[in-house]
Image (cartoon, rainbow, N blue to C red; front, top):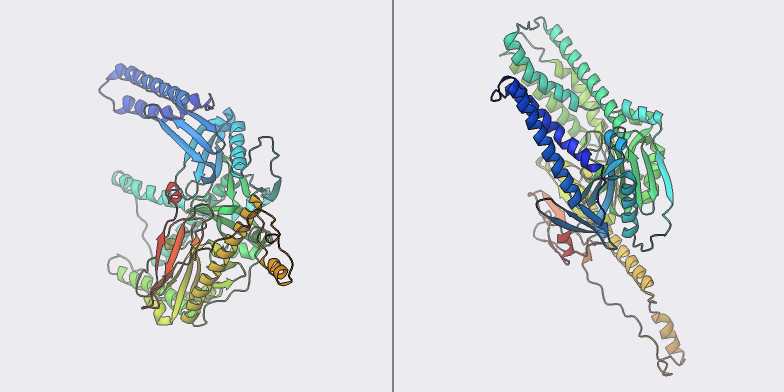
Length: 605
C-alpha cells in the first residue's frame, strides 16, 4: 500500500486552518466581548492556537490512515480517521484520471488526483495530495491497465500532438470571450449596498429629460459590455493558457491552465457528441470552437467549461482555432465531413419574425404602462423602431438551422448568435423524440431530437432538427431508428468477430463443405478423422445491448409528442432494451427497458 505525500500534511493543515483561524480571530477581537479587553486578545490567540493544533493533529492522523494500491484489476483506497472506508474501483469503470495543481501546490511539488467514473456526477476517488511524479505515474498506469496491459515494462503508446494554442490564438480567445458573471455580482452587490449607503448619505438622484435618461441607459449597457468583455478575456486566459491536446492510444489528453493547472483525459470510446461552436465574430474571421461531450462527466471541469457554460459532460477539445483545423479534427475523430443541411420550410421565416415582433410589442406595452407610475415620461415607442431588426433576425435564425443524415452520423445546426453544429454517431443515440408544441401544430411543423447518454434534452443539449415538416419529421424519426439498429448490429458483429479472433476460433465455411459434399469428395468425418468440433454460433436475440448508458425509459410527454427508443447495445454493461410500439396513436410510442446485467447498478445508473 502507498501513502500520500508527506507534504500533504502541512499543506492540508494550513488550507483548513486559515479560514477557521481568521473567523475565530475576527470574532474574538471585534465581537467577542466575553473575553474583555486584553484578555480577549489573549483568549483569541489561545483559541486560534488550539484550533490549529487540532487541525494539524487530524491531518496527521488522516495521512497515516490513508492508503491506496494499484492492483491488476482495481484501484483500492482505504481511508478514514474515525470511520474507515474501503473502496475498490475497477479500471473498466474509470473514465478519466484528472490532475490539478494550483500555484501553491506547484511550489511545493504536490498535485490532486481525481478519479471519475462513467455516468457519475461526483468524484469517485480523490488523492489529496501526492507528488506530481506520482500523479503522472498513476495516470499512466491506470490507462495501461484499462487497456489490459500486464507487463509494466511495455512501451507507452505514441503521443500525437493534435493541437497547441499559440499566444496569438490565446489572445484571440480572450478577445472573443464575454463573461456576464462579474457584472451580475456587481449588480447584486450594488443593489444591496446602495440602499444602505443612501440611508446615511444624501445621494442626489439625476433628473432630466427623457433623452438624458436614454443616454444614461446606453452608457450603462456599454459599461456592462466592457466589464463583461474584460472578465471574459481574463477568464479565457487563465483557463486556456498553455493548452495542448494530444492523442495517446485510445484517449485524448489535454493540459491547460495558468493559476490552476489541469492534466486530464477524454476517452475516445466514451465520446457521445462533437459540437462545432461559433458566433458572428468567429465566423467573420474564420474561427470556431470544438466541444467534446462524454457520457456524464466533463474531465477537469468544475461545473463550467471555462467560459461560464455549464459543462454537463462537455469539454472544450479546441478552445479556438481556424474553422478548417476544427473540421479536420472532427473528420479525424469521427470520420465525417459536414454535409449539406436541409433547413426548415420557407414559411417558418415568418414564424420567427412574428415571435421577435411579439417580444418587442410586449416591451412596448410594458413601457407604456410604466408611464402611469413614473414621474417623467418614458419613450415607450422606442422598441417599435426595432421591428425591422426582428424581421432580419428571424431570417437569420431560419437560415442557420438545418439537419443532415450522413452515412454514419446525424448532424444538426442551430443558432445565429451562438451557432452549434452537432455530430452524433447513430450507435450513440439513446432515444428519438418528436415534439409538436401548440404553436408548431399551427404551423404544421415538428421538432425531432436525438438524445444521447451525455446530453440533457430538457436544456437543449441534444442534436435537434427544429421546425421541419410533419411528414419529414415522421420519416426522419423512422430513418434514425433504422440506422441506429443497423449501426448497432454492425458493431455487435464486429465485436463478435474480434472476440472469436482473440480466442482463436475459426468461423465455419459452409459453402466449401457443401461443395465438397456435392462433388462426392470424402469429408474428414467420413474418413474417420477426429478434429476439434466446429464452432456453432447461436442465434442472436432481437434485442441489443446499450452502448454506454444503461437502462433508459421512454415516456410520451404530451398529446403532441412522440418518443421511440430503438434497440441499443452496451459495450461495457451488457444491458438490453426492448421496444414496443403503440399503434393506437401515431404520435405516442412507449418504450420499456429491462436491465440484463446487474453491472449497471454498480455503475450508478
